[in-house]
Image 1 (cartoon, rainbow, N blue to C red):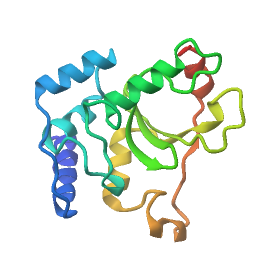
Image 2 (image 1 turned 180 degrees about the vertical axis):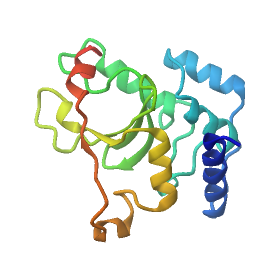
Image 3 (image 1 turned 120 degrees about the horizontal axis):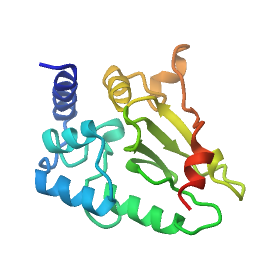
Image 4 (image 1 turned 90 degrees about the vertical axis):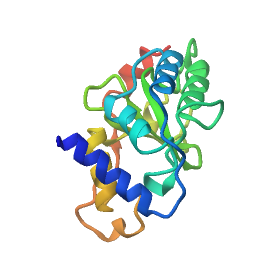
Length: 185
């Protein structure tokens, strides 16, 4: 068993034990359809989780979005946000970053499918003051693996008890935001 196999197994066990009835996992044809609509491949770990755990409904706050569908889905949210960004003077959403869950108040967690490690980003538009959206983008985790490990350990910044821990690191400004947003226009 590889480290990734072990991680997927532990995520599946935790997701099943959280008490929510999970949607069925997606098939290869749905992964292919989503990637075709997105125009790029999903990060391999993200694809495995959708294929082997469930089509959303697990993870932090049980909110992982379903993969396909209009509106509140990975593909629907990505395509809507990209459509609004293409050709805009100040694009909001970078190419290749798929929203995987909503935190509420228009905030999203997104996976950068163009990065090898699948860094996880936080889009927090509430402080937006006009102009560039770069101030609204934060790096939540340097990799998708680390993000899931944080969830499994219960040590994410979003955990109720995390605010009492001195070792909890919250999202930091995303250093690539300006560059990635300007190349998205």
